[in-house]
Structure formats: C-alpha cells, structure tokens
Image (cartoon, rainbow, N blue to C red):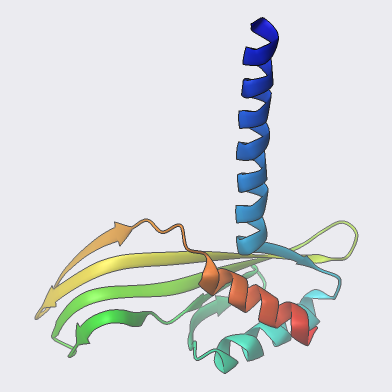
Length: 140
C-alpha cells in the first residue's frame, strides 16, 4: 500500500514538472546568436506580427510593446474592453547564447474621460508568446 502511494505521488510530481517545463518553453527560449542579432530579429518579428514598440532599453535588456485591444472599443476618452501587451526581457548567458523571455499582460480596462480602471486577468493560453518566439527562432 505504501509503495502504491509513493508511486502516485511520484507520478503527480513528474506531471507537474512536465507542465512547468512546457509552460516555460512557451514563454522563454534560448537562441544561439549574439544579443545584437537577436535584438534586431525580435524587433522585425514584432513588427511583422503587428506589434508596435512603445519603450525599449537595450542596455538594460528589455522591450515593451504598445497595448492592443483584443475585445471592445477605444475612443480615446472612452474605452471599455480587454487589452494586452508584451514585455520582452533579453539576457546574455555565459556561453554567449541569448535567453528571451516574453511576458504577456492581459487586462480589462474601462476609461471615462481621464479616469482609468484596470483589472489584470490571468491567462493560461501562451499562444502569443509561442508564436513570437517561434518567429524569432525561424528567422535566426
């Protein structure tokens, strides 16, 4: 009986570990290229996928896209709906490769005049991150 319980616990731990590895793979990749090359390809990939870049700090290794409306309306002084944006973090590893992590923020927004109300939403769908990282990898 004790062996069966141990087996179940081991299976559960392995399944959870596999889920974590799969999730981090959808949100982070390591590329065998220089930071300059990865940065240039990433900017091109973002533009190709319709993302505009709002802010970037190459020395610090991050880039933030403009927000995009996924559902709802945005009329400047009035907005209601769901938006999302990407934050990319670049890190040069000791072996010269570059790790790129994509953080996907999704939120509900309601704006009347200049009063904003935002509520972050959790998401388990990492297709946006995966598509971007796949595009970067294919271009490199």
